[in-house]
Length: 251
Image (cartoon, rainbow, N blue to C red; front, side, top):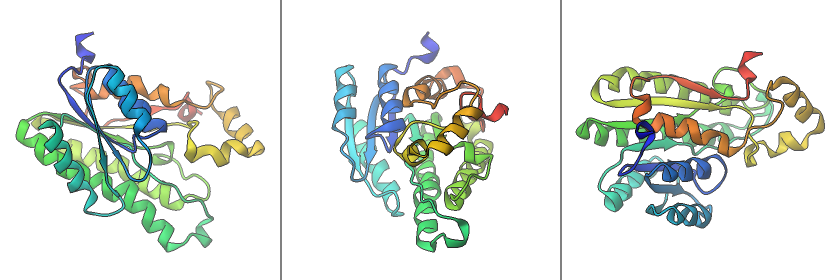
């Protein structure tokens, strides 16, 4: 099990106040990592409490990742608190739902700023630090909509396709320099982002009928894959988009 031991490692997890980000941050702490929790306006106290109860350090960094200056602030504060960054989980994301013909340009831009631009800027900034230390693990959160088109979410779909492509591009550059860049593509997960779908009786039934596992995913379903990609167990994996989807992509 030493392959999965993250003792002495420092992780930065964006969007970690609740949902998928919270589960991944706590999971990394369970494996031994100290964690910098990046949030905007959300309250991170529960995440911090759970991490500290495991005997690990947790610091909160507040940053608007929709602003291009947010990434550098995150890296500066994380390095100030811990002195290094070994793991980056780019989880923060937003979604705006509207038919493509009615999709506001502001919604399109807001989604790309958070879901794509911030991912690149954080990878770039943290990547510089990881190149200096010749080691690091970057995990970008993709989506089933990195492969499919979705309905009424053109901006989100475009951003998640791009996250998958960016993951592969960075892997090509950095795999030989001690840095693994991979992505996790969650399936349909029971989070705030999918509440509207789960509340739609018809759409909820349609989704469940297609998932071979017969259920929505939970944030805890991402803990194992995250720890794996953050650990030495995945040292020979680069540029992979790992589907955690209950079998959705098999149909």
